Image (cartoon, rainbow, N blue to C red; front, side):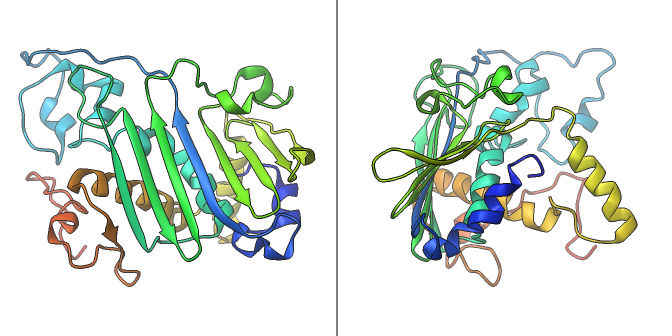
Length: 289
């Protein structure tokens, strides 16, 4: 989060405490992850190419015949290797929403969607909606991977040249306050705050760093000072958990309730069975490390 405008945090603080600001109370955050992705097609199994250590590539995943459609970037779209675009690309917007909201684990999660557009080998949804419920706040994730008019922030804006065309920005976050509304985006999209009449009352352009130099320097500084980095792994694990909760709710097809003491699901053996993979020998992680 090093590249998000620090002035916003200094003025507003976490959204969970915004009732003391002109923004009002925040009860809804909407996160988008929409763009056009290419089909991976349909590919039959084939012999392992020369020079490929396929057993090592599979690692703890179940053994299966080699298929080139599972390799390279396409592994994101198979459950045994990943969790679809919510965990590939959407997690970045979800992390901003988690950070801005000040929330930790949700009380419950529900999800719907499916493979509505593509007719290929992918297993994960091309259309996906997730709803996480907290105390007096709901966060919604919406994804469509077949939307050519929805785009990421373009290069001139990433370099500080204005604001995105918000309705067609597929990686935006919308924050609904009782008195004001905010649009913001990753990739240096910045933010704009609107009042009840749609007038812009606060804004700041972003600045995207392709090299992530600020994050790298912060990590090095924390090695020396022993302070926690801005993007501490325990905090970011919560953002990732939101995505996994959404995927598991999608796969079992029902609303799930989360136990805050364990992070697992209450009274749902089927859902809890998806929290951890079954490791293929010899890539078995023992319960006690």
